[in-house]
Each structure stands twice: as C-alpha cells, then as structure tokens.
Length: 319
Image 1 (cartoon, rainbow, N blue to C red):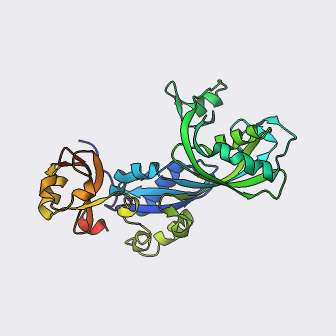
Image 2 (spheres, rainbow, N blue to C red; image 1 turned 60 degrees about the horizontal axis):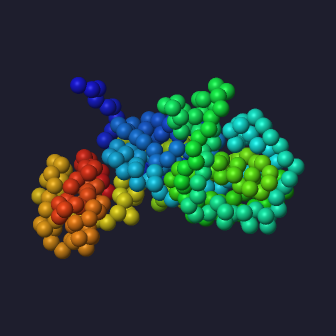
Image 3 (cartoon, rainbow, N blue to C red; image 1 turned 180 degrees about the horizontal axis):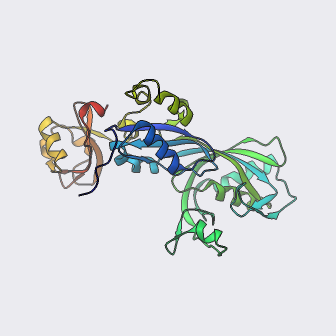
C-alpha cells in the first residue's frame, strides 16, 4: 500500500500573485505547506522571470485544473528593442543587435499580423520535450534546438506604452500554449529589428485576476494569526469558481450517491433537464449538483449520464 498523504482535507483555489524569480513548482509547494494541504497543483506554468496570477488548486480542486489550463489569459509584457538574447529574455546572453527602433505607429500596424489563429515556434529555452528531453536542457548543453511551429490563438494585443524609443509595453490576451517570449521575438523580426522580454506579468487567468489575488508574504503572515489556519482559509475560493462556464444539472440525493460510486444514471430519470445536456445523443459535459453542491463532472452520451471526475469531499467543503 502507498503511504498516506499528510495534511488537511481542504479543497478550493488560491489566487496566488507569484513573485518574480520564483518558479511555479516551488510557489505551489509553498502554498501547500502554508495551508497544510494534502494535494496541490497549478493551472498553467509561469516562468521564474514572470510575476502575476498563478491559480493554485488544493485538494479536490486539483481535479478541475484542466479547465483553467485552457482558460484565456492576459499578460503585460515589456520589450527592449535592439538586442536579441539566447533565451529571448533578460536572462540570456545577447546574440544579435540592431540599430533599428520601430515607431509606435509601426508597432500598432504590425499587431494584427499576430492576432487570431497563428502558428508560433516555441523558444529553444522552453519546457517542451524534444526526443524525450526538455528543450532548455538541450539548449544549455550547447545543442541546436529546432522546435516545430504550433497552432495558438492570440485574441487581442494592445500597445500600452512606447514613450521610450528603446522599449514598449504591450498587453496580450491569448489562449493556451502561447509563449510571450516567442511573440516578442517574432514581432521584432516582423518590424525589421530584434528584441527581448525585460518584464512579464500575468494579470488574468480565466476568472482569476489581480483584484482578489494574494502574495506569498501575505499568506505567510496570515498563517500565524490563529492556530487553526482560519485566517488563511478565508482566502480559499470555492472549487466551483472554475466551473461557471459548464452547465449545471441538478440531481437527487439518490442519484448523487450513485454518481459518487461511479455509476451512470439514465437521462430519462432527470425530468425536465434535457435542455441542460443537449438532446442526450451527443456528448455533453456538465456538472452534476446536489443541494447546490458539486458532485461530479459528467458526460451525457446515448441518453446516459456518466461520471468522469467525482468529487470526494465532505459537503461542507464544497461551497
């Protein structure tokens, strides 16, 4: 038998404002330690160079991470024109320079070229695997790393500041898999120059934004206010925070019990709920809810409701 995980049975989301110079994995480990949680995970890696929103899932909320990984994200990025680096950010050595500085008008005119569904080549210094090895490890070893372009989506790009001819700040709203460093590199090349990222901040991930975010230092201070960690727990958002875009389907206590046991139930038994799950003949994802509490993520197929991810927390934790 495996060793039983230590920690509390606490479930929900912490909207962490990750500091710069700290990786996503150690940031999540710090949150897990502070909350004394059995399980923790994050929704979308944020480079050590970057600061900002890193949603951390605790307990049963780790089963909903997939919904945040595909969520729309917003970044503010600062570019410095005239110097390209190995890593496409300030941590790498300069490998190319240019005297050309694009005007604000030129920058704005170029942005539509990078908006919408585009192909993007990830940076060599990235966590993508090539032949089973992380690309950044190959690059650090001096090997030439060529990664294939991938389809990504950038929904909107706005020029925020270009007061200095040597730099500019942009806001980028995008989907899953976009590398802001690659965007900066490609934008510069399109404008006939080179550039690298000097600062990067993520300001939004789906429903999580800066308004209700909390930093590690604040969490650490709250940890010592009362012995039962109640001051910390006040900053845990409900698991349902990330499920608002998924249709909810009310089930009875008996149906909820069957779903929790992994059993499928008939759509016919759910009177008046067909509209919430299409026509029962096409695969539809929704949240089964009992007494206003989430029971499971389910799929409706062939007139049957199948549980896909069952939540195993006490009802009082599933606010």
